[in-house]
Every structure is written in structure tokens, then in C-alpha cells.
Image (cartoon, rainbow, N blue to C red; front, side, top):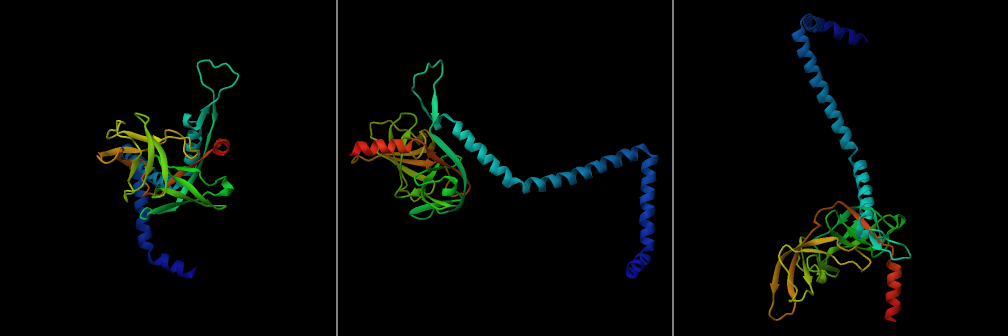
Length: 275
């Protein structure tokens, strides 16, 4: 305490000067309406800037919570989309409407790790069996398909990426309805090939490619990509089609895991038919 008083005594002239400056400023502001208006405006700008900084820091700290809320909301919106439902035919009267039953459920997840430079690429997600995740569920990004769940732990799961040479996805051309298989055989993380489209099918650059559905993995009409090149080999009966993928898999981010609630029924019928 003695040192503090000693320090204040040494700077007494500076403190007196500062006090007189404050007194003079306050006297000038109070005695002059113009100065008072200028001071009020400056104070408002200062406090506005400080509050802006505070709100920016607070908003940044809440981004994680906001993102989680947006993911949940997107999942609910996907589940309300018509692609998540199938028509229901029952003993009811339908008046200017179509009855539907929900077929697909969506769960939000984050990609915690992924690869794109290998022949067989995978993605690790932060949702596992405790969140209801099982094998063969589809994984969707904000813009299109991402992959298929392959291995599941209690808290995490691993999905086969679309960028895997062994993964084939049933797709179709949105404009014509002709269907084929999407395979990644380009070694380019942005491009894939569309196979088994016969030459009689009209295919044009910029045609949209979407999921065909029916495999119990993806709903129908989910974006896959856009045709960027069509080649015709005289020795083949099929087009050679390059597709630019709708989803950029070189970026990690948020996804939705989709499950088909009718898959067990369909697989059981398919198994019985095969026998």
C-alpha cells in the first residue's frame, strides 16, 4: 500500500492534469449544445462498436449450437419432402390429394475423417449404433449423395465413399428416365462414370443425373451430378458418360444418414422370390 501511495504521489501532476482535462471537457460539453451533440454521437458510436464486437464474439461462440440446430431442422425438412414418402392405397376416398406413408428417416451427422486419394475411400461419421445407425444406410450431403454405411460402432460409423472403385449406385437421367450404374473409375474426386446407358438413349451435356431409388439405400431423385461429356465407342453398344458429382467430397462437413423403413419388407420379398 505504501508503494501505491508513493507511485500516486510521483504522478500527482499527471493525475491533476488529467482531472482538469476531464473537468474542462465535461464543462465544455454541458455548456455548449453543439459540443454536447458531438460528444453524444461519438459515445454512441463507441458503444455501438463495443457492442458489435461483443455480439460478434458471442455469435462465433454459438456457431456450433446454431449448426446443430440447422442440421436437425434440415433433417426434419428432408423427412417432410415428397421423396421420403411412398403412396398408400387403402380403403379410403382421396379427394384432390394423394395419401403417403413415410419411407425414409434422416439423421444428422458430421464427417470427422475422410479420404479421397485412394482407390477405396471411406468417411468416418460421429454417429453409431446408439443413434440408430446400421449397415447399408445411405449418406447424403447438402448437394447430393456421399456414400453408404459399411461398419458401425456404438458412437461412430464408417461409410464407403462414392469415390470407391467397388461401389456402384443405381441412377437415372432425370430428363429421359434411362437408368444405369454410377461408378468411380476416373481417379478424379470430382468426376465419375455412368455405365449401361444404351446408345439409343438420348444423352446430352448438362443432363441431370439422380438416384433411381428402390435399392433401400437412397430415396429417388436425389441429385448425383451433371453430365459433362458423352463419348460413343463404335465397338460398344453403350455410351461412355462422364458425370461431375454434385457433392464435393474433398471437403468435410455435415451430412444426413438416411434409412429406408420399408427395406426389411422389400428384402424379405426379394429373398423369397429368389428362392
